[in-house]
Amino acid sequence: MTSAIIITFCCLVLVAYLFDITAPKTKIPTVILLLLVGYGLKELTKFLNITVPDLSDTLPLLGTVGLILIVMEGALELQLNKEKLSIVRKSIWGSLIPIILLGGGIAYAFHLYSGYPLKDCITNALPLCIISSAIAIPTVRNLSKQAKEFITFESSLSDIIGVIIFNFFALNEMINAASVGEFFLQLIAIVVISLIATLLLAFLFKRINHHIKFLPIIFMVILIYTIAKAYHLPALIFILIFGLFLGNLDELKRYSFINKFDPDNLEKEVHKFHEITIEFTFLIRSLFFLVFGYLIKAEEVLNTATIGWAVAIVAAILVIRVIQLKISKLPLHPLAFIAPRGLITVLLFVSITPAQAIPIMNQSLIIQVILLCALIMMIGIMTTKTRP
Image 1: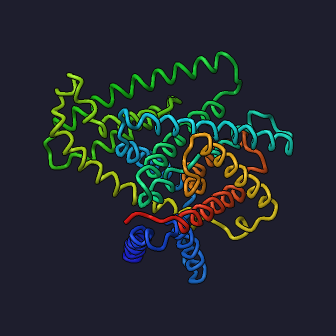
Image 2: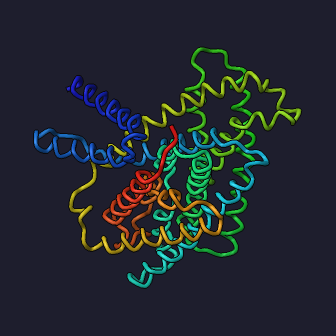
Image 3: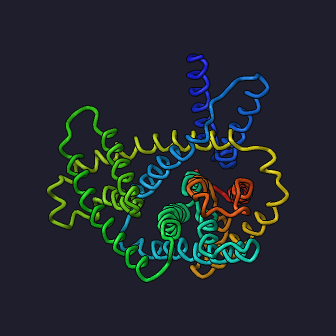
């Protein structure tokens, strides 16, 4: 039994790797293939009458760790300088405005249809409004530099802003001046904590001489994130600040205090750390979508009660995205097609408490929206000329 588990695990990771390296040629998003493999594996276990433990509890764990690593990987790749101010500004608006418009529109539709309180409808609608960096960033790595930078900025910020807004509505029973004031205090607190923790971790980068160096730092990052989240702080801001600090040491050299960290040597260590982060991210992301595919049921994908909602929501996503790109004067092709939903959508959906849940926002709707967005993204990538 142990040997069978090890062989299966190794084969699945190698298959995921094969999908990853062939994606530029096939132009099929890796997430679709991983979901199909996961679903096929479930059908195979049924056919062979193999008993598999319930994997549903592993999904939030993989999703949380994956989200941390994905945002950190994206932040490490982002270069902040005067030349990037325009694209950063467009990315901020590109991530914030669709969340507000889509969240408000979908929530109001849920409210009219179900009669549930508008606050609960907003909480349920927000997971559908956030671009999944777990899918978007790997998909665009072979596109133009401008497209890659915009999608990396936009999807990472969409994750962070979306989670912050979701937590604000999910964790506050009443939305009033007191809750808004507490929210801003939490933002200030996490920024201060992030700056202190980032400097401490950068110091450890310089001081640790042991041959095992990067794994403890990754686990410290996850630990700080989890503790901050336990106190209802917007912990993804810490991941963003930490990644941006390490990824932009060149830009920070003009500040005298940075010299205390020996930035030239630190950059070499950061490069190694980035490589390890990429590999860990690949592993966790692949496992998440394999497990998610395994948990998918055919009747949920083909649920006629929610397919109309799913098509309408995806259509709204595309319309708002086209308008947003037009206003930002960015090319519609392929950017209009790249607005996937995925890991973060599932992660927020499963965190909605039973008291806040509404019937129309169910697993069928989530799966249908994710698959439709992935298929549209595949069309966009297939009709786009990629760089070598």
